[in-house]
Image (cartoon, rainbow, N blue to C red; front, side, top):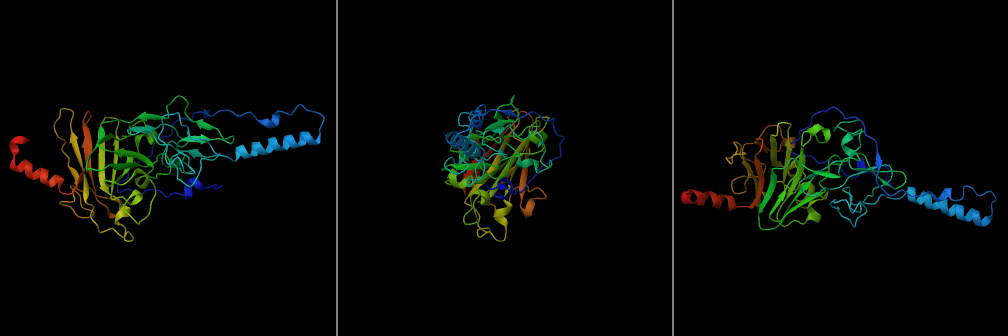
Length: 359
């Protein structure tokens, strides 16, 4: 059994943009057991005075059963409305690496439905830089008895984010926006499979880390399966951690939502074999204010006009030299990430110029 499994097995995802602020920790909350309580078999014979070989065998079996239970795993809560991640793997549905299990003494992360945020984490790990690597201790606690513990009993497992941000897929085949597990190991394991439209999770000002961390997504191309997209892959193909584009979003206390679209720094690394290959699909952000008028910012990666690491209105300071752009959505507005194939946006612009009366 690996004791350092949650900090060494999976690396931390590096996105083009990173928006973190140090926040004051909340008061610690008591840990509440939600798993089924097991009776300790070793107590069954505690009142027996006379000993016998048969009784000693029974007691030994009870002790062995207790040790096996303590060294076992915590089961994924299948009736809690959560999204199981690779349920046939060792992780058995938990949003952790597929080759490890949820074992006693660890916090085990889980995936929420699209548009929702996890509301459970170690009460002492309220900020990204909390002692002992606070971002790693998200999810439910697996206690020494193999029961899952809900750190905040009055909170649901998942809760709707701020809303107002969605994905529209115009690429013809399904695309996957894979959300990083946070608080957690930041691997891109939480799936949002987009056939036509889907909602994305938008962090709020009162979420974990006091809203100082945005929801982060790796955008996989059309036709890439969820199984291949939402996992830690390798440089053999541009999927998973090597997907070309990333996105992020969060809402502040004033109701203003900030969206980001950028290139994945890992895609651009010297050792990446496809680093000079421009994808045949692009992404753009369409934004409307509350009154229906367009937002002031524009942000897109269009393979018809852009090359690798090019983008409209690039911001400064992207990690690893990557480029990204920002769209600010005023309170009450809405925004959409639109995924499209090469040429489709160019043809649309040409039609608008040729037939302005239709638009």
